[in-house]
Image (cartoon, rainbow, N blue to C red; front, side):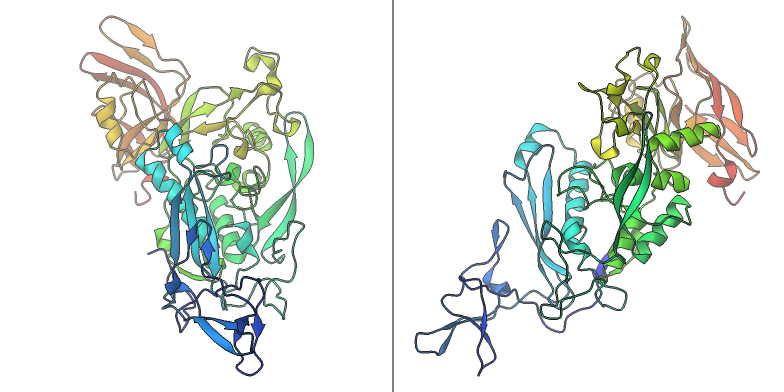
Amino acid sequence: MALSVKHISSTTLLVPRHCEEAVYYTHPTYNVKYCLHNCKRALMCHYMEIPSEYLSECYQASPYGTLSQIYQNGTGVPPNSYVLFVTYIQDNLCAGNLFAYATSCQNDPLTDRPVMGYLNMCPDMFSKRVVNPSEWINIIKHEVGHALGVSSYHYALMRDERGYPRTERDPQTNLPRHRDTNNNYLASTNTIQKIQRNWMSAVTNVPRMVNSLVTPSVLSAARKHFNCKTLDGVDLENEGSSASAGSHFEARIYGDELMVAELQKKSLITPILLAYMNDTGWYNVNFRVAEKWEYGKNLGCTFATRSCYEYMLTQKSRGQSYYPYCDRPSSVSCRSETSYGMCSIQKYAQALPIENQYFTNPRTFNDPQVGNYGGGANFMDYCPMLTIMDSFENLPVISDCRNGQNTVTMGKGMNVYMQSYGAQSICIEHSGHMTYHTYFMSHNLGESVSGSCHSYHCLGNNSISIDFAGQTVVCSNGEVVKQIDITRQSSRLTGTIKCPLVQLLCPTN
């Protein structure tokens, strides 16, 4: 179990009934709240009527000054529970490419922990696009994250490790003291800070203000992941509507994290998300459920705080990889230790905003309208990204090296790169082009594909063996490149690969 309730109430939780006139009165003699006219019969959580078993008692004044109990207390919500209402309704919030939305509708009055919420799925979007089971699961987990407290609404309600509010409260209402221009509660600067980032594109260099999470566990997890000891905040999404901006981690920086606004083929529960849940003060967190997360790992402070363009320039000046970004349209290369991806760049009808223009050389696209080119996702700030693929060599192969089903699928085609997939597979980078030979011809595979999946085994002598269609290539510790010449039945593959770092894959060697 990832989460359990940290501060469990000694009694069941009852949702207060409302008065029709939206005002409670307190009786001076009986010290109970009552309605001057009528108690509301029903209370809604978005589209769903909250069952009466979860609602509190309600008294109503009579014309003679006496009180009548119109409704009795229900059995209540168990103190360590969460009630989630799920609907499937097309409404005006189901706009654009939105699959679903969710949030909480009731909080624990003592701790502010969300105890009741809703999740609505948008029928039109599901009917327009084929959604595989893993994407369904991603969507549902993401929305449950919002319902449990990942949203701008909840930041001002978070508690510290002792259970005290992180944000100053109004002593009269016990609610956060300050609101913004949209009437939303404002979180304290110990939770959210506005931070100025330098933003460089190919044609401009401007300051950019971002909202960043600065709670202790979140900062610690992010500093460790990016290997950036001076990281001053976990930036929140700055693009999209109010439902997206501020309520997600910045997609450009956090990639395939579950709580970014641009969900990937596989989105992950990361230490960042678990750290956030810990910093709410509402949950005991089992950090062992964090999934292996490679996006952005050890890429440093420039990656975590600057633009994709500046990061690419910095890495190029060092002669180093600038993954997860790219600059060769439709090229395929390793996007992590265990996956490859395609460089996603497209042409837009109009020039992108100058802060999102990352190309200046018309020869890159053989097109003078170079400012119209950018990555395919606005949540990624139009950065050109290596994106997960769902086909390879015209076969339905997901570009995840660990997906064993890919081996079966690739067996139905030529498998010219002699790939193998499974739990022990990694992405191997190519150095230059590969050549595929048959009895009748030799085919230069070109440089558009510079990464492929292969299983490996640690040999115990500071070397590893890499599998190419049942045959092995051995890389020793310290080798940078390796010539390969693999024969499989009537075909042959020749070329050069980059040897992976043996000490990282086989640390006990």
